[in-house]
Amino acid sequence: MRFHSLPAVCLFTVTFMSAASLRAEDDGLRQRLEDANGVRTDVWVYNDIGKAMQQARAENKPLFVTFRCVPCKACAAFDADVANGNDRVRALAKEKFISVRQVEMKGVDLSLFQFDHDLNWAAMFVNADGVVYARYGTQSAEGPDAFNSIDGLLNTMQRVLELHAAFPKNIEELRGKRGKPRKTSSALKMAGLQNPAKLAAETTRKNCIHCHMIHDAEHAQAQKTETFTHDMLWRFPLPNNVGLEIDRTTGTRISNVFKGSAAAAAGMNVDDEIIRMNGQRITSIADMQWVLHNLPNTNTELNLESSRGGSQTLKLKAGWKKYDISWRGSIWSVSPRLRVWAPSLSFNQRKELGLSASTAAFQVKWINRGSSGGRSAFESGLRQGDVIAGLEGTPLRDISPSQFNVHIKLNYKVGDELPVTVLRAGKRSELKLRLVE
Image 1: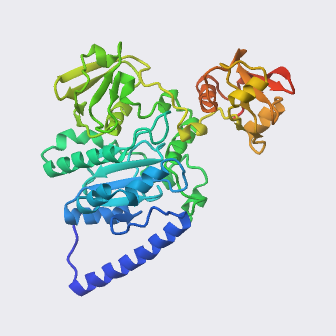
Image 2 (image 1 turned 135 degrees about the vertical axis):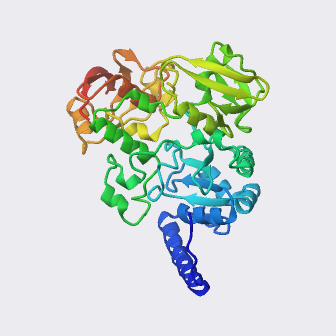
Image 3 (image 1 turned 90 degrees about the horizontal axis):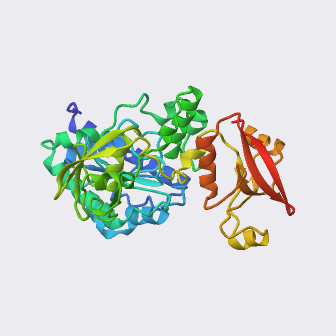
């Protein structure tokens, strides 16, 4: 980027007015979103990546961009600690980075900022030229904060500073970290985005574009154009999928190699540090997930470079990407949709119904009869208060409501009937719920 010279007085005036206007806009957005963690204006550029890019170029610093959906409760404590609580993060973010708190996806360049959009908190590190240094933020069925920690984040930040100091001599190990250009780089222009006119209005808590809505839009468009496949769902698999458990604090050290896995067959060892995957420099578990995300779910190979073992090639078999995706918010946008809310019954509630301790059961609390899926479930005989205790003629065992929902999406299609066993007033019935959306 190049700037033409302007008279000093004019430049000062434009900058001053722009800054004042931005401050007022930032304050308004913070108030509308009720963003209690967005107050450290001495550290964070608020929701303006473009402004931060200019500052990063002027000061030759890397950008540290955090993405946070303010209305979401998950990761709230970690977000607070990063944004305004931890002294070590605050010092490093202020002195060594141009740091951005991004609280909506409206103005984000989706071609540059490609990450796991199902996360409740995520970070990317880039330079002013749009070169990606690192990603941080990982989630699984264990919970939204199971992988995130201040020490883990700080370790990644230190590695980013090393990469930035070596740039551009290290460009070759960074090229693959930026994804291929997307068909549209604006969330508001995504073909599958629902209610774009409402979302284009002034941002409030009710019309904020959440990160997961990017995946929702991708699902909607793929299903509309009949290009959707289940392989789209196996996003950002953990290194566990190839047989590697990575220490969550260091983000790069192997803490376990699973027996019989591709990693074990390749001779990977505990306590080795992963340096590169397929030539990309690794700074975190999220970096590893990015590499794995971009590999096919077919027979393929993965090259690893470790601190003591040198270079090893892992041979992955078709289907290697599959894992428990029930935690993902975007899974709800995938057809078929039952449109029923049925949380799990407690052990004592199941006992009162005469169900065994190993049997799962869900009680129907709400049927969304305002949707075609909910109306169809009601017309098929399902009622509020029913207890779903079986699927396909078999008792439910060791399954959560979210996993039940994923099972439907992976094994049924619109037009199919879902055979469930329900308990109602002490009687057992077999229903076939017609899936229509």
